[in-house]
Length: 95
Image 1 (cartoon, rainbow, N blue to C red):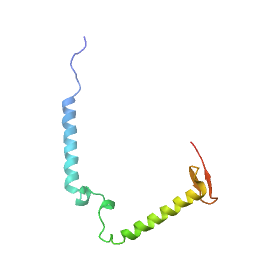
Image 2 (cartoon, one colour):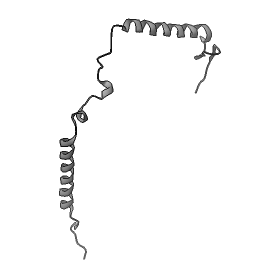
Image 3 (cartoon, rainbow, N blue to C red):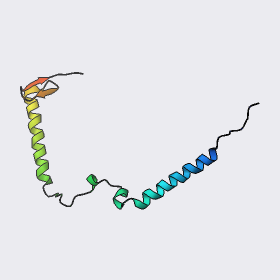
Image 4 (cartoon, rainbow, N blue to C red):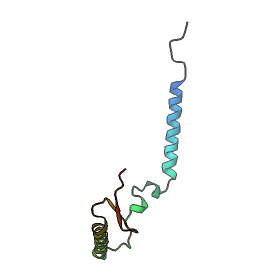
């Protein structure tokens, strides 16, 4: 006759797993440096040398570049989807 009970030591394995996880948790949080727990990555932190004074100048340059590209599109490739800048020819490339 077969045994009806589960014979593997489940409780012992659970206790061992909890003990190992608790040990790793304690070792990590007692030996890790403060920089490890920083929630903001370094590349997202504000830099002290960033200047906001020249934003109007930069925005005007971006606007001028956009208008240059758009007027070239109007002049050379208006009925088409895109402009090929070297040949100044419009093209429709549907996927």
